[in-house]
Length: 122
Image (tube, rainbow, N blue to C red; front, side, top):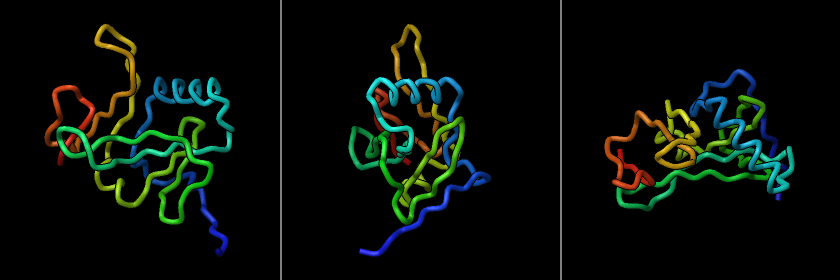
């Protein structure tokens, strides 16, 4: 298998914007779960849920060859080519209020969402 080199783009266009609150919570999760500093935050979408698509948040050891990779808020973010269309312009926030605690995707591409807020459609 050949070697793959991934370039982290410092000035890359943000596909997903992280709020400072989301970045703090992601860093806290990495630390609490002993995830190495070198691991990237993977953002994406996959088929599923009431409305057709669900969000993916994960940590990856290495970005894939066709990922867009950029750094924001002290985190390396990688997004696969397919997910870029669905996530373009999205803001990832973190909420800790009366309605619950968790990450919130504010996605201008979403034309519908399910009642529970865990999936969306375009």
